Length: 48
Image (cartoon, rainbow, N blue to C red; front, side, top):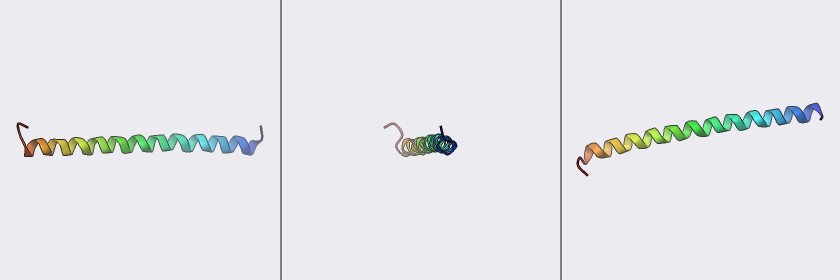
């Protein structure tokens, strides 16, 4: 296999891994924001 093809495949794998970590981080941030909103809603409407 040509060295430039190997380098391109390695770069593609690296970018894919970085994108997955970014999406995972955004998902965690969204979950925390949802939890915060839920907590505030429960404080505003206790017993519901």
